[in-house]
Amino acid sequence: MLRGMLGGAAVALALPPLEAMLDSHGKAFADGQALPVRFMTWFFGNGVILPRYTPSTQGTDWELTEELAPLENVRDYCSILSGFDNKAGYGRRGHHDGVAGAFSGHPFIELDPMGANYASKFGGPSIDQVVASAIGAQTYLPSLHVGVSKRVTKGEGPTLQYLSHKGPDEPVPTEYSPQAVFDALFNNYTPKDDPSGPLRVSLLDAVREDAKRLQLRVGSSDKQRLEAHLDSIAQLQKRIQAIPPACTKPGAPTQTNEDVDGNEPLQEVSHAMADLVAIA
Image 1 (cartoon, rainbow, N blue to C red):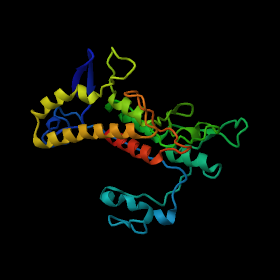
Image 2 (cartoon, rainbow, N blue to C red):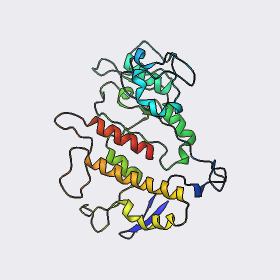
Image 3 (cartoon, helix red, strand yellow):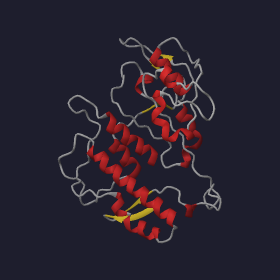
Image 4 (cartoon, rainbow, N blue to C red):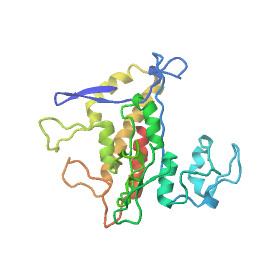
């Protein structure tokens, strides 16, 4: 952690693993503690066009198809899995089957539609919560749930309203504001004598001196990694604050992911959320 003081309170900023923190093999922390493990799912609605998505070849030289073209620069790190059938209640209700089956492997449980066409809830925990129950204690936040589009179906039960579920009756809410996610991860600090926020100070300013001291104690590669980490946080904060609509009151918390002329800023929010997850 980088530490600092602001307004009489202690603040801290988590760091990525540096070489100085690791053992001689770089496979664990210096005290032998295992490195934290991460797991991520990324859901997008309505599936893919299979002829444009599924590679026609197998093995390490798999074909880069039209819809997989954005993976070109990272294809050596990717494995594309295809040819599977999900038997979790398939055939009853398409969207409900797709979400519950893909994320939990459990058939969904039908609910009283209460006037809607259909309603359901998950039949078991989603895969992210199964993983979080095993490795979530290794990280500051056991799990993080972010979304991009707020056009969510709310009238057909929790299956279509939420992606993450601890169990049939425990949906995990999604956060759609990049600013709220940033604050949860980095906790921007407002001095106690200024609760309204016009002199809101970034956490990066509070830990700047500690960062300078740390840079004197680590090697050149760690210095570069530390600088890149701090720069990426600062740049991401500026990008989030620039997501329309811009807040006109100086220093007030920026409201993000709000419609502009009836349209969601999907591209801007998607990029910001992706970077937040990567930094987390």
